[in-house]
Length: 80
Image 1: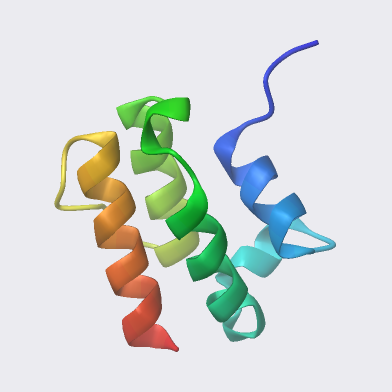
Image 2: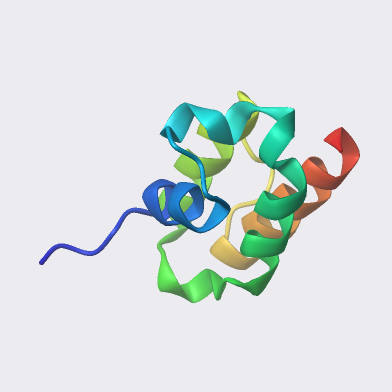
């Protein structure tokens, strides 16, 4: 069985019926908590970068999975 993508994991753990719900304000608080608990090394730098871009609609400034994770948490917190 293929590994679940980072976006799929986030959507499932946030209770989003659709992947696109990760864009909405409704799930920001729970998304921040899910990302915070997730080990950055479970996914590649590229997958973190792609997920960041999908969720926020812009590219991450950070390069590594751990840095992108922190940037994503910070960005989500600002939008809450």
